[in-house]
Image (cartoon, rainbow, N blue to C red):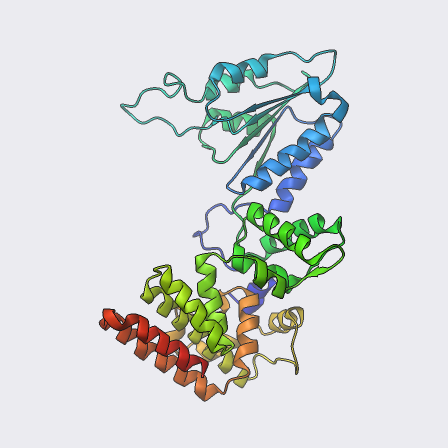
Length: 405
């Protein structure tokens, strides 16, 4: 994979060529466009691990399909995996009232259980999902009934799934990734839409920092964004300082923050973060491995800068400036790393461009020879940590202090 491709979004596929999850933006547009058409399809299936997006898209479908004045009689919501099969079938079989169109939202009713194996009892006999009966009851175009089905997981092998695909719209909302540029753009647009009402703003750098701390799940991110908007006040920009003050990082994010503090040579912050991680009983080897990985990336960034492949403008280069510059770097970095075994599994270009940007900003402040010594120090300390379990915590503390000096 070329540097140019990596920096233009998404990176290489890691699924060995299997089906790739569609863009969340494309899926939302597909569903809403179908609902807005003069003859909307009779059934919509929305599913995936990004549950907030599944629910939010379903609500927008309801708004498009059922006028607010008609929702008392024109909308029926059947909710929960414990709903008896007969209740689901009754909802599908009820006729529209007063000549109005009718919408049924089957919300998390577990209509797609795993297939039974030899020797297991039939799921429907156990009170499970009535998948076959639901398939037979699905409305057809022109009957005045629309069904919206929302689930976390589906079995694509079931006849119900295939039938919905033939006569309706199927949208998958996979878990959003913090290393996928398309997903990050979507998160940024989604956050901007929510902040627009109060005139708040969230810069791209601040968004990336927030995602690094809290993850890419929309439900968690939006809760954090609402909290941050209240903190800064209407019409103000949410910056990284506010995020650091209010957002509690995930444990894996605290490892990332430790590496950032070491990279910035902020000894006090690094030791505070290290104490917190060790108090949470995170294995010392995991901390040491994270420091080793980041130190390798720092050295690679330093060599890219020294070779002139990466040219950082004077002053505080912005992320968009850096990304445009890297898109023109092509494959030249391969010539630098090709002969070195130690870079085979630790290639800086396997990281998100924002991580590369921050690493290059830090690396340009440290002499290349010092970066090489740091890597030798980390590898030597790693061997000591593996061999001396009792003094592992002290060895990591010494390593952090030495890297920050």
